[in-house]
Image 1 (cartoon, rainbow, N blue to C red):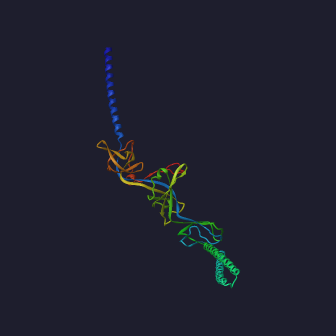
Image 2: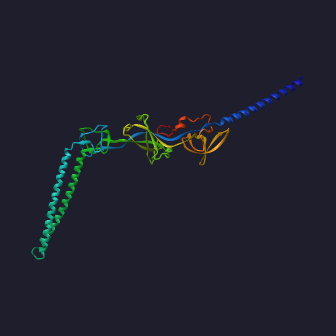
Image 3: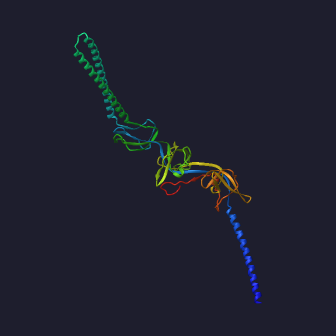
Length: 390
């Protein structure tokens, strides 16, 4: 009886092991099958656009500015206030011109005297030359002595030198008059162009010396904005590319412009090579004032097409491929891609909207409506001194 009991126990254990092994095998296959199904993750391709931007902060600068300095010394009798506007040619600063007017009149008199002396020297030389010609004719007849002729020749030579000196005095007096006229004109400082006084350093009654800085004058009907771009992104920026300008001062308004220029040489800031790009924009309404902050965004590329995640695209040499799920099978399609912002890419050819695109290595991914309908994705750049990306 004991032997029969043992045999039954062994049989039960064998059956239990077989059942357990079968269950383990089935469970393992189901688990692997489930894992394989989970690894094939897809996202629906949708029509949209992808834009790649390089963005940077900037400070508003006048399109044209000029430091106005005094050419003469004297007392100011008329000076502007900050914010005053002028048309080209209108007088901005006026000096007391009493002394320079006197100097100008004296220079006129000296020039006239020099001209009179020159004319007298010309007349004297002419007479002496005429006398010398007559005496030389008489010398052959013996009517005059050789010493008389020699003496007259010396007088002619001296008169020639006197005339040269008189002509130099006329030239010197003319230069003095020109200087005096410049000083007289400098007593009135006209606006070099249509503009506005940004800053003034003087007021009515101030005594200034030659070369003193009087004011800062600028044209702000257009403004220039400069932004810093690191070496990673500068190769993407070219003159003429579209620029969008935003600022707190503009509210929801966005200004449009183009890249004016790109600096040809880097400037090292915090051990980072930085290049500067600039743009000029119309500012007739003066919404942007010098010193204000603004952000500029350069449109590097923008493409409309079928938008898919960037990680769904694989590239071999110059060819790009995307895997799609069709009727439960994964198929590979060759595609032509456009703008790629690192998150999404625009497929220009080879893929239709609505297809299920396989996205490797992602458990939850969906195309946001902002990207698929009107994509505006920014390539972040490091801003020097901030220690991070913007």
